[in-house]
Image: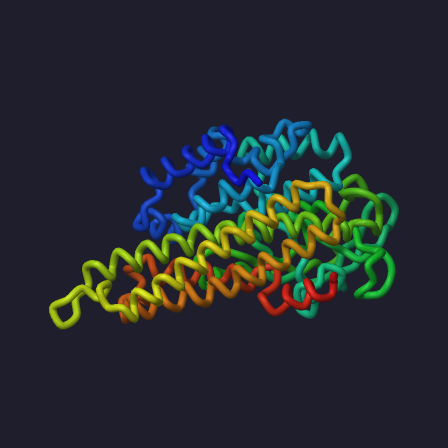
Length: 378
């Protein structure tokens, strides 16, 4: 089987590598995180000009192609530099739901705005009691005339503080954990009745807790068939899982490389610690974990791009998330330990990389959750 990138994928990888090398240093990232928005609007527009915001979208929607492998190429390079711009919440999650569920008119109206960098999105699917279960939806929407009246509570809404529109999973019929009866509404983030409590996660990325109190939403803001949104939610979330797993692979590579370089310069008893056999073995184990993580993420991306049954795709994604989670703990903890005390200081990028991959380990389901999901789908 040929695992080499196509010419287009190689060009995409090269363009991202050049950008992060020239413009996304660790100090620049710290300045961006300290800004009002927590990401660079200038860089976001540059992403649009370079065509990166088109990567998750299909050719029929004027996108780059919509392949998961393309997305993996991009996200792995983003991970190496810890890019904080809201690519996953806006393009992969939000744009993905519009692409999968939206009518031709909705896609033609909103997708070009996303790809042009003029529309920020956030997906509100998690609830206080849902625990990674997309079918656990207690937030309700009741049709009154031509409007849906939405009430509910969503947590961990990535890019929630800066989103122009919220894509919200709501229950239009059935019990709280029923698979049927779930719909997706696109709601103006500044609508009356919406209260956003914004906060910064440990990795520097910003999110929000969002409450809806009798929020009126026009009927034309429903995406797809009423009560039938769960399969699309699962499909788009699985694609986002592969994206953040690829980001983690890039970040783990950076942690490994920085640890190896540090071991060549840090001296103990007059000798570089990289010459100590015990540390060499530990760094070799880190290398193996990085390669295993990259391989299984590639497998999951290729499976998503194939014609295999949906259950096989879900199993591949869960296998990748579970295995990457193990690599995150091994590589991240070893990198911090071998750097010693400076490994957790704010002035060194190793600690920030460790925080980011630790956040990814729990995002969209931790290793234990996906191990159980993999077994359940067998």
